[in-house]
Structures are given as C-alpha cells and as structure tokens.
Length: 247
Image (cartoon, rainbow, N blue to C red; front, side):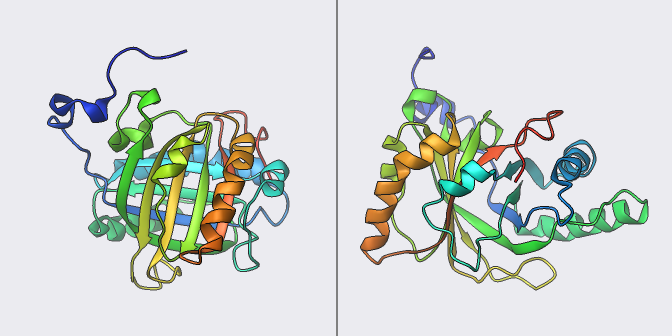
C-alpha cells in the first residue's frame, strides 16, 4: 500500500532539520556456530550484548543479519575468502573515536560474565560511510535507513567501486548505503583498506530480491570495474523467533 505524501529527500524543509550523524560502520562477519547453536547465540546477542552497546553515545543504530541455506543458494558471488560468512553484525557510529569505548565496554561485559564465545570471525572492518540513497516509494529519507524496519539486506562487498544507484530500480530494494573500509589497527579489524561495502536495504523477501539483482550484478562485474568478494542476501533477525532464520 502506497504511503502518503512527498518523499523526505525531496523536501528541503525536512532535510534542513537534520541529515543524521552516522559516519562510520563497524562490521563483523562470521561463520555459523561451530556446534550448530546459532539460535541460542542470536538469543544472547539480541537480548543482552547488542542493546548494551547503545549506552555508548557514539553508537546510533545496529543491524544483525543471518544467512539461511536459501540465502546461500541465491548468492551471486561467494569466493572462498568470504564464502563461510553466515552472520553479519553492523554497528552505526557517529565517528571512529567511538571504537575505543566500544572495546572497553566489551571488556567490562566480559569481566561481568556476560559474554558467550564469539562466532568464528571471517572478517571485521571499520568503514567510512559514503553515498546514501532511498527509493521515493518508501517516503523516508536515505539518512534514516538504519532505523527503518527491513526484512533483510543484500550485501555487496567488492574490491574497487562502481555505481549502485541504478540498483534502486530493482523490486524489493528500498535504499542503499555504500561505505569504504578504513586502515585501522588489528585490534579492531582485518579488512583490507579500500574495500567497498554496499548495504541494499530490502523490504521484500531477500532471496527473491537476490534473484532480481543477479543479472545486473553479472553485468556490473563483466565490466571489470569492481571485483566481488561477496554478493549475498541476508534475513534480519526476528526477536524471540531465534530459530526462524539460521544457517
């Protein structure tokens, strides 16, 4: 059903009231749980660890994504270096300076006995946010997409950079944020500097949306401008339905 009114990104008076202060992403990509306890891990992380991060003034939003077997089958690219990724956790920060309190809070929670063993990591990165766009049909502006209820996301991790705005025309894609990995210390991240990560925020079934994206992505990579490291749909975790979407 079409929502009423003019999209925010077309209304100067709305944009003048604020464009959001998120500039930095911390992205943790991990494998499935080694003992198959993915649902229990998601329960702990969603009810305990994740909300605690929001006591930090630099943390503005968070998004937890999980891959299912159907998601895996719909991947357009999954090279060996990143194929094991089934869980993605993203925190949206105001600035990179928030990373030190982030690490300190993690230690404090651990010292209080509040941490489970982390999922085996594949790659962690700190990213600088670049372009943000939203399709007019959802009305809300691109700046507020991290707070907008999504069914999931399509993640596009690449070496190099190519335009993404045309992917908004794909049914199911509601908006896109694109970010570039930063050079930071090994305490925080392992991602090589200069990688491009695009979040395609999805409001339809992520697997069906992935199939619509596949031909556009194949054409994109055939031009040789960007090399795919991962191109995959993910579901958003549904609170209190921990086993609804698991690897």
